Length: 261
Image 1: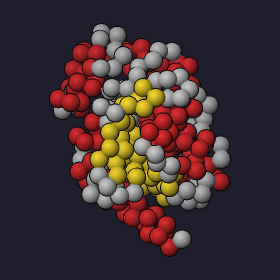
Image 2: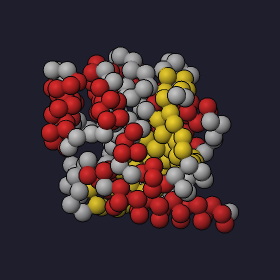
Image 3: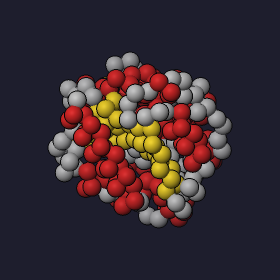
């Protein structure tokens, strides 16, 4: 099981790679793990054409679960991603993040965009705004992770055995710190208008984040935006049969343009 170490605070980051081709970094959403990319068909749909790099975001899966809000700043998340790339001796990547992973991608866009060949972000945005999600997360974990898992599966269906195991590895205090920082951090939207990298942003029309994701795309002259009709926040990730055609068309276009330079 490969790990990298964040050079700032030493947190271990678990990662895996599969496939061959241009490097594509996949960063999952809150309360997920790298297993999410496997369970919902992204690995099988992409590994023939891309070298897929997947990691467990800190406070998730087999990565470290430090406590305290100071352990979850955008800068630390960026350095987690860079630590994985450094371990693999990869300098530039295509980036695809969903939800919490998309927010991390906006942090990379702000702080170290030179590492990005392109950016795909779904279901989240770079803006500072309050959300009921923080209170919901705290409430859902007050009776322990097994109770929280039961509620999640009642609402969304049974997870795979691997995903269930990863869910139960979570540390409630670490999770609360991570989601608190997400919504208490000043926005990451500064400089979007000067971003030169190709961007694809998408969101389900039934996702409460939809208009914010669309707004972020509108600030970037290099961005396109896709609305996924009738899909909510979770469905817009889980329906890889709908997402993958948009993603692969975008990435193919980026790679074709790079070949002409």
